[in-house]
Amino acid sequence: MTLPVSASDLGIALPALPLNREFTPRYGEVEEVAPGIRRVLARNPNAFTFHGTGTYIIGRGKVAVVDPGPLLAEHVDAVLAAVAGEHVSHILITHTHGDHSPAAAPLKRATGAPTFGFGPHGAGRLAEGVAVEEGGDRDFVPDVVVTDGDVITGADWQVECVHTPGHTSNHLCFALREQSALFCGDHVMGWSTTVIVPPDGDMAEYFASLEKLRLREDRIYYPTHGAPIESPQAFVAALIAHRHARERQIEACIAAGVQALTQIVRVIYSEVDPRLHPAAAMSVRAHLTHLISTGRLRQEGSRFVLQG
Image (cartoon, rainbow, N blue to C red):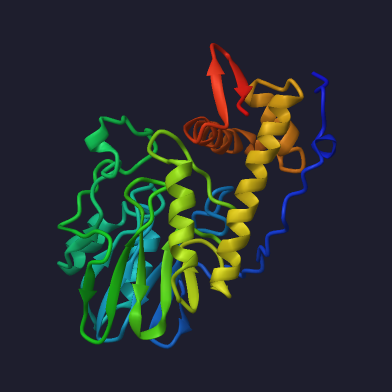
């Protein structure tokens, strides 16, 4: 089907994102990414995980594991090999997607370490009665519930919990105070933007969480997928500008008579591999909900109408 407009017709340029896709995967090996921080990469590459899930190990001797990863026996074995002869005192979970939390169960059985997280899948929306998407790890329930501002203390490190809903309602980042480093899960990724999947994912919360991180003074980010992010405040500011530009593109589409979600995606994501359009549609749906909630758009039956 021929679309009535193209992305260039909208006249709204997306701010450039300083994405970094330079990353050499070393599956199953333990890599020291900074003093006192090691990473083991799971062999689960795909369009959403980039080269795979990076499980981080904090400290030496008595250690914490951040995001144990997917339920892959070879990855669990690699993490256990990386901490052989050490005591795992904490297992920290950024959120409950299937590439982050499922391996917590076998890691806990092997080490006896308690798990820490904001809550089970959808925990940030359960009080509102929101039914969340099916893709989450519904088996995970943290032994210790932590929320924004809580501090987890290990043998020679302290981690501050930073609640960052948006990608999921139970998403946490973990700030390692000794290094001004933030383990940011999927909230910020240096290789790609983050997919927001309603109803558990929420664009308004995502914007607020990005702004929250922009105002912090973390020196470096360690996302679960991809390489570390240096100059993180500038990167977050670029993400915020990028998302606002996407919303202006959506408004321009609607003004031009492009109404169907799939058509909006084809216009504004024309440069993106069509295989990723279903994921992009989830974020566009989250943007539409945000535009309605902020009064810039209203819905009349199956049509969207610009306000003001």
